[in-house]
Image (cartoon, rainbow, N blue to C red; front, side, top):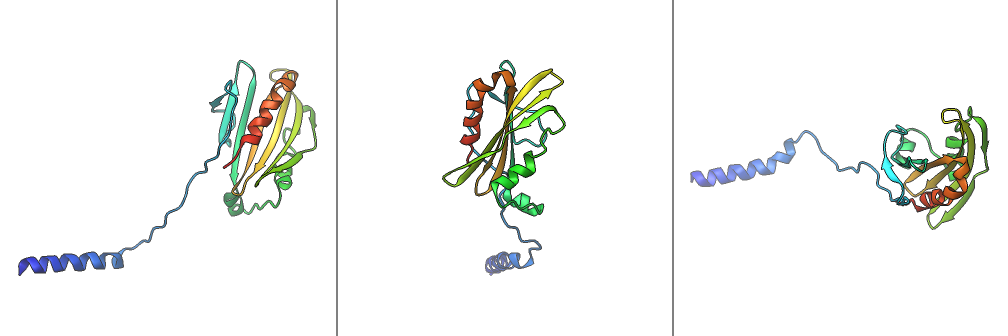
Length: 175
């Protein structure tokens, strides 16, 4: 008899437990994963830009780059809704390094491959610290869920050697 009461009490407790739970939990996703291809002469790095999601470089070759990922959901939570890749590009790169000497920026070229949109332009400026002209490939990638800013740079004298690799990095991004 005592066994039956103990079993019955246990069953009633297990049934009643969810009724007394104070908080309901729901599962959410955190973080964002994306794919990118880097040349084998570059390696992941840190310390170049606090906002970057990924940094890459080769100090010997003097080649550097960063990727900044902005999820569309987080942008909308911050009340920043971009309707086109061009609007996002303009917002982020219109005044990029605007105070640098000899700054020259080309018009962005935009194209779409499948569901992903890409925009890129060339930027040149004089950097006083190394005392050299610098070339940057500025790019934006728009996927269904995110915008990616891709900034790759090198000494301007090496632009022709590395620009094709910079473009391959830009056009390799997907999520």
